[in-house]
Length: 291
Ligand code: BJW
Image 1: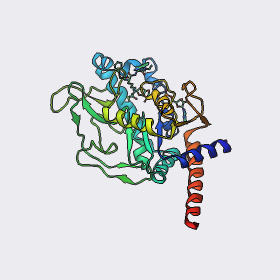
Image 2: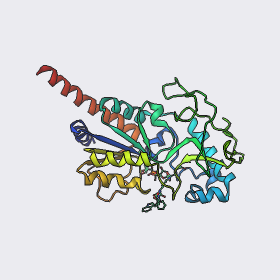
Image 3: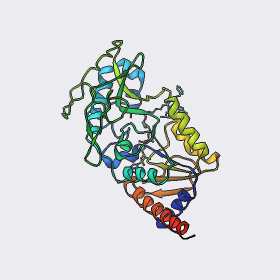
Image 4: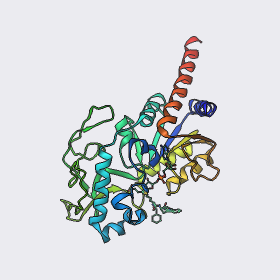
């Protein structure tokens, strides 16, 4: 493992551009179940691929809204872990690093990552079903991962951590709730996430694909590679000549598109990788200072 970490760190330090792409496994050690794990307890009898669709919401808005309210309450109680902080620190060490995530939980921003490309939206924002009118909830400060208070903006929307949503009391009670109506058009509010069969946000896709095409190293963290189009990123990066490094306790479904596998949980592997990268950059700067 030590040798593999060193090799990955060598590639990262030599790279002009690095892309990091994270999935549900990234947040597992913060206590957030993966999408499929989220179907436990009261929700075990439902098919996630039916709940996470527009058709599922139209058929039973109360059920889908309540599932998201349950997950949102759980996510609000979670904090970033050492792996999230390691990536935020890596962004500061490597200014060309682009962080792309399929996660909807906002934990990268909470850890201090300044620029996060969210491919599947955010559970912390709402929009209406029929016209995608954004819903500006009353802004409240939310504790960030350092125990401080992240500033809320004046809309409660643009900062992922700033919005407080309606019908999401802090209690853990599991009563079903109806989605509130959009104040503009009256259609039901829904989470601003990407459901199956929906297009991903155009700007996020453009940035992620341009990043993957041009990067020298793609670091894939905690994704199974089963959901498209995000699963395409390693092949896009490979086709552009990049090296692909995977961080995961179990190898994902990337059919030969991975150059180096760092086996283990994100919360352990990423801080160790950051340490190797930091040492190499320090040595490099020391040599430059001497010459
Ligand atoms: C650890 C760890 C630790 C554990 N440390 N790691 C082409 C081919 C086939 C299908 C399609 C295709 N194109 C489109 C589709 C259909 C569909 C799709 O992909 N279906 C698949 C099920 C086959 N895709 C879409 O519909 C997408 N839209 C689209 O393509 O639009 C164009 C279009 C429109 C109309 C028709 C046709 C095309 C949209 C996909 C949106 C996905 N949305 C979700 C829900 C978001 C909201 C919510 O959460 O409720 O996003 S689905 C869910 O899966 C969620 C996740 O972001 C996503 C990805 O999951 P991820 O991150 O890979 O997690 P897991 O759970 O699968 O894996 C966890 C991993 O972590 C594992 O590897 C563990 O080992 C690891 N792990 N502990 C590190 N400690």
